[in-house]
Length: 128
Image: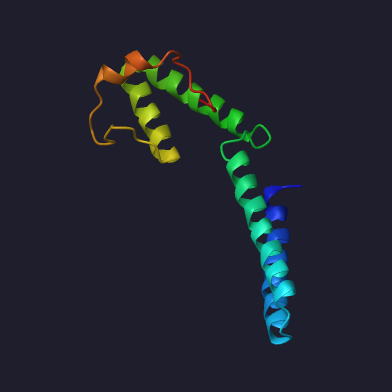
């Protein structure tokens, strides 16, 4: 099951549980209302878990192809005379920015070589 189809299933369960909670409350059946609420809550927890597990996954090799293309472009720029260390620093910062991760680093114009020491592999990788 894809994440998109899981989202639809969870949406149906949540809408159904909201309707069931309203109907059970009107019928003065607290047990059914609580049960319907729990079904919706469990469905949402399943969706949250699926999102957490699949975030950053390879998505069928699509990211491998993008990484290969990016590495080829970096190689072309280096062959054209661009400073490789500075270029890879820019790429690392762009990846961090895309992931929403910046531990103590600013994403400004600092293109110093200080971050080159903490990277063990020069290649662009999908899952670091």
